[in-house]
Amino acid sequence: MKRLLDTFSKTAIGHILAVIIVLGCFILVYVMMIKSIPTENVSTVNQAVGFIYGMLGIVVGYFFGSSKSQNDKPIP
Image 1 (cartoon, rainbow, N blue to C red):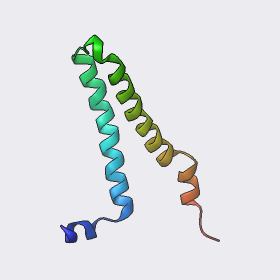
Image 2: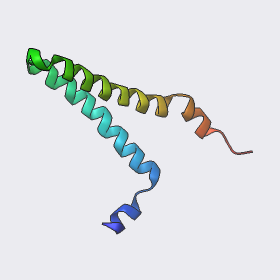
Image 3: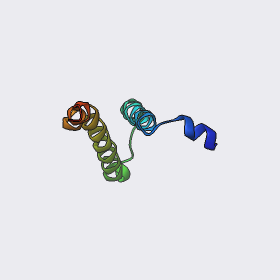
Image 4: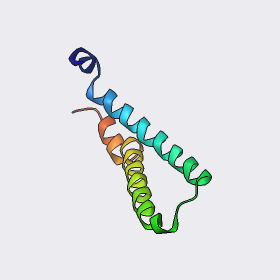
């Protein structure tokens, strides 16, 4: 296991987590379209969905936002 973790850099692990989060959001949208939500669980589901899409916003903001341009700048 340690050898496997040594082969991944921190950026690779970050990219893998980002892909998992984005795919999870698309899967969530699909499941919500085909399944009905019981009325007593609507509030809980709304909170969970908001949390997940907040994470998606963080991922998109990191990879395409201002931190992306800061990481691309050459060090003087």
